[in-house]
Length: 279
View 1 (cartoon, rainbow, N blue to C red):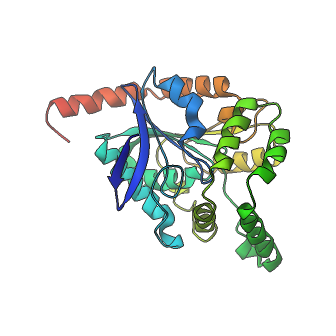
View 2 (view 1 turned 120 degrees about the vertical axis):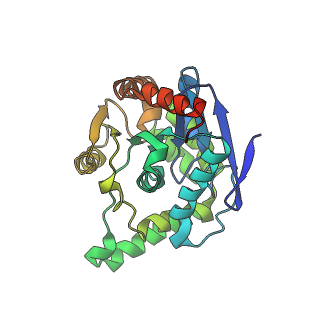
């Protein structure tokens, strides 16, 4: 199985196909398996890279302080792309994975062609409201994940009874969860300015969400309206993860978006620079 030593840790990754590099970034409760249908579909059309974030899946431990987690994972991504000799890429990220994707794009805009964010929206800051009760309840919810994963499978099956592909992948992720590291990552999101830099992104962003959860969809709409260059796309009969609930719709949506952004021209220009020996 392919691993690479990057930034003081070991990252598990899979790379398939050729051409336009597309990097898929999972959220903080799953692994690279979250994008299995997309990896299969796009590897026939592009160079697909999926990997497990530090502290997730088959990658190394979350051996950094909570306030350094997002920055460290950004550095991990840069190191991985360097090792794979990928100069620029399309970034597709789901839910909490979008936080590090956006920060990476903000810090290294020359490395990102365009970006797609799936089921991602700005989180409300409970600290600003001064609600100690809400914070306490959220902490209790976090620690409930130390309960045996089998206790959650029935409710997961009920929730995703209409989307069996999503159920089977999420079930597999639930049974292999790394709870302590997942909690550390969730706290990193809560106690950091996760989205402040996102509003200054100067690259095109596709914002995708399912229409099944009205509350989440409303938050995604508000989020999309704040980006300088964003397009909102809503997938019918889907909820998180909408790309697994309706993979065919999502794959076609992303493919059409990339064609409209003329991303192949970016790769042609990059290859031309390489052939001339310039950076």
